[in-house]
Image (cartoon, rainbow, N blue to C red; front, side, top):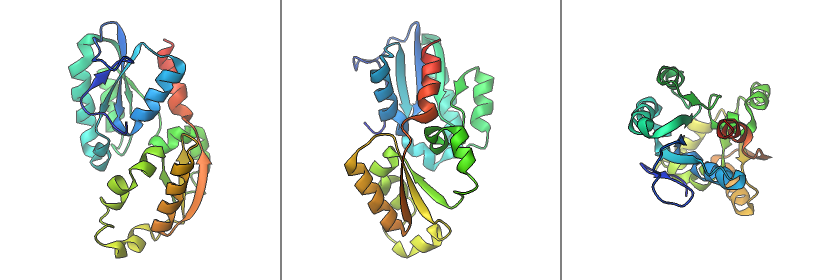
Length: 214
């Protein structure tokens, strides 16, 4: 499951009744990771609804989509949390979440919270020329990187778009040899050096745990 759109599920796979439960409103790019963490930690009281991952191609639409989803589900849930970082909204999502009285994941983007915001910021100056991929983006490289940038039609644009990057960093949430091989191929296609970094779930896991334990 790479993304869920307009659906809320319990661990049984059936629609959630919601009453007295906790709802996570998340980016579809995080669906697999959240479901894995729910299973591993037996967070049966957490329900999940995901917005389309492709909203990241239009970050100006994320804040309103989250707002509408909170309004849609608020009456049925004891608590609602937003599993997005800032994600290119320029602080607008945080401001709206504050207005709505809901918490969101801290950090500028998922690359930061997967690595751990503190660790990511410590590397930031040295990695200003790094291009990051997560498990999701490795799986969906063509749909979220190659084609949106027009490289499938105009490969000559590669050096123009990525000329200031020096390496591709694969932040791996899982240890999957097939994904590692695909990530290395992505680096070759972009003409970048390749680095594998096993981040696991980082601050996503610790944040969800803090919410689940309340």
